[in-house]
Image (cartoon, rainbow, N blue to C red; front, side, top):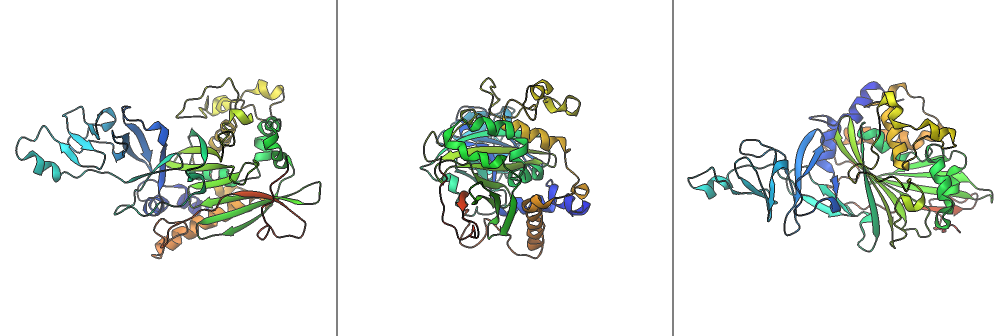
Length: 420
């Protein structure tokens, strides 16, 4: 059982909270879709770990990631003008380039260049990979970026962004928990069975799986095992790079087809989810509406795909008439709306000490142990799993799924693409 103190230790990320320090000092953190950083647009507001930043695309493609407030008189750089390779504060005209240097300070009339060179600017290295922009907040020289299977240049990706008003950990646990898919998402999955290339999603509608998990050098591997009518086992493997990246197979006709869940911790009570579908062809990187995971009439905000339509008093926007007509949840705009609604309904930070975990919650329980062990590892002066500071770098394997015969270990099985 998770204690109240352990819950606080895992969920709190602002200021000097140990979990926030762990993530900032050891991991690259996602903050935006690359496509949403366009030269000429205004600076993008970013909030991570309770702190505010401004990000912008410079003329030559570099992304600047700066503390939001101008180092001069602390006006917001979100109001700034993007000029060439920098942002100019509209208050007094100071200009800061994407590398974090003050290049113009019109208010300094004596030895302006020497003065500008001494002005400290909070700026941070950025890496673009897999269609997302990631920032290194750990100080010093940025370490190598991890090798991520969904970041291969020859893959196609489709990303959506969801703003969720609850703890980052509630979002992360949702990405690890395979059990909920066949219950919470059953209406969307049933609709998706119309598409032949996703027909194996029917396994997710079967009985709750048994779980087998193992710790890895990068984080966690979880296998959800379900029996099939043929006597074989359907094995769906989820790979997790501690503490923010989870990849699963989506049942496409290639092992390189998958879904990616990437959590961006905003503050103690908010997070952003970047949800991606990935594949080797444009069609395999299907959009949500193409696999019936979205109402075709729904036009979402590109910066908030879920857009919950109410608070507790409005049941977070649930449409009970849809339920009367047969929709299981009453959240009929998208599958991600269902996730956001149930996670938000738990409260800003759920009290895990009051839970009653069942046998199918093995992966969630393992994840929590892993997070607590990572905190203890750092406290002991050692490097936690998946840290970008690990010698030799970090490589995350691809998620996969397979059918294995009874008595065959899934760890030893060769990938057997499911027939469609």
